[in-house]
Image (cartoon, rainbow, N blue to C red; front, side):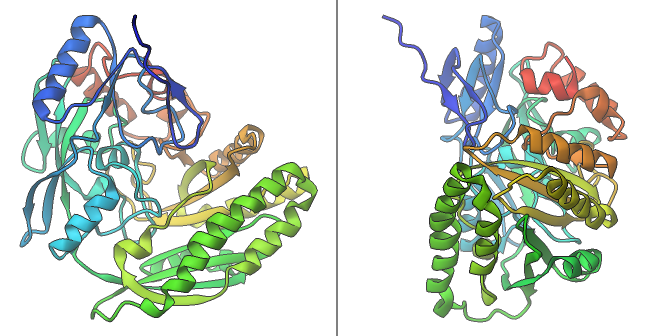
Length: 437
């Protein structure tokens, strides 16, 4: 009897697939053998991490490579603050590993469950007007290419394609190791406040420029923004252990436990959403604390949702958020999940949403039990009107022809793809949509 593979589903339950076969290589050589075997069988092959992309970027109908066992430390150079790790290492484990050696990532997003390879391949970023995303912190990586050979690309080897492979969408090969430029370990002082939305929008560009890490959340149907200002601490100070109980109440009980109930009620009784939104905004009080950077940047996300995020020229973010606000009010929609607004420095990665411009990110969400498409499509059109580029790992509806005009090096990336994967062994339906066949 032949047993079929169980279906694979991503975290957001937006994608599922039943691969022809699943392999779990523990060595680079095993990855090479898997690629060569897939070629002989005429199957496409894709690596998968923890499934935190909302899009189908990691869907593998042919051979699915689960890289969980390829997830350890390879080399660390503390004086140079560089670390090389296997591709399947999750970010939260990387953070602890670096901390043990007095190092840290320069910046980190608010979710740290992704693998290193998955995070850089989709353009994962944090917030901070002077800080680039995770892929821009990469100084080198090793790919298994479409013929099963190894290709090292770094700041000293094959440098001409480094801007392509650091954020490669999984379209150029299977990443097996990554070298990251780190920084000395540091703390963050977090100042979280409720403020009037209009005042926050008016001052967003300045605050993004002058503060280390600034972001805010806005619950539709309210006039309140929940701001978070994280400041890097030069002189280490004792962690604010006295506040950890209240932080657990805020992060786990209120943000996850109670909020899951709020979303469920809002789904069943949409008319209550505005009142619930105001309650949610009020329930997050002002607080300050200081802790290790990894514990401040990332928070647990237990309430399942769907997300779309667009990168805009930073000075256009306030207009765009106001436009979304007007549209929600005009349509009479009931939106229970907040809109999140962040920033990032310009970078030089060919397919980075922050390529060549100081950037602001606007992300919209819907609870997992709600259909996001009408809302997301409408917001997407607003974002496109302000020069938006979609986050590759979050839901959007764009195709290659439209995306080409937003990335000056789009065709340069395709040329690298033609060179490294001419027979499209690493593609899937999502990549065919956004890059072309």
